Image: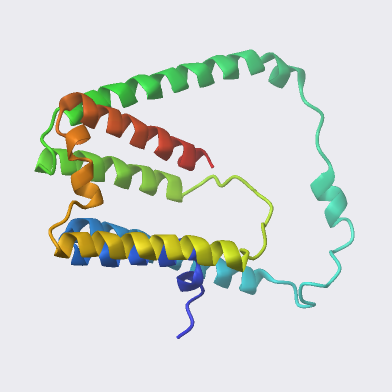
Length: 211
């Protein structure tokens, strides 16, 4: 059965991460990556089916209906009340950003105080990630131009890097050599290091959510 979502590069990457995480003794990480990959594949297949059902009878090359472009391109003039409320919206945005930053700092400090791999730390990270995914899944989406097909050399290069990293991690684990996770132990053993890592994780996550 041909599932369009399976062919998405991000889905393939997540499936590889899930596989290597599971065989390296991290079944929870593997399960989470598998769930995210399955969700993205399902969403891509659903969008593809919806676009195919909404396609015009004449196909991609058919002409648009008369008056449609004019109706879409017509933009109402900005009302005076909207112009007046712009400073208020700016103040509200700044306040919301400050609240998110303060909440992120508090979250990083509190969760960073938990012992690594403990249930409180695991549930705090998984719970926040699940909440963000559930909220963000509903949109709104930011429209971006279609970049077209990925260039094959770059795709093959990054795929090779991912595969080499996974094989190196697996070989290091099997031979009792330091793995990437073990190399981060000196940084994550203390409260400050864990809080700093969580803060960086929140910053990266916030950047990805905004995109």
